[in-house]
Length: 192
Image (tube, rainbow, N blue to C red; front, top):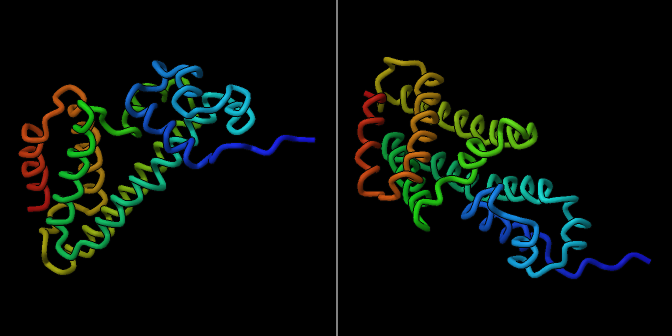
């Protein structure tokens, strides 16, 4: 008879996400995970298959919680420029926290993409969702006359995602929000 799982997998994934986010994939061992999660190695393998499976679950959790919340706040903003400014500033605040932990998705892209197609797919889907949300906000703002129609919304959205990715990498090098926040104003000139 199979044993009943004796731990909350959602809570375990959330805690694993925090550990991977702080330490990175390579620097996090299975032993680190089992100790941090308070579960046995057998339980980890039974629930997630292996370390890669838990990492993918952690990335998915990041996508459905933090990344999804950022997109909701963007879509709820009435003024496009203010909503984009808030989104970028909030991402800086999160990324510079914990001594520059960065963004889990960007960290994954830097650390895992060459050898992990599943991680590439997850990160690409997150990037695409962000780009699509920005396109819709920019399109509506252009129609309302809030921003100049000088560039296509697709192009501006792609630029802002690229800028944000670079900003999030920079946050690991310089984990100081006061240094990075002025760059947001420069990026927003793309809306003029």
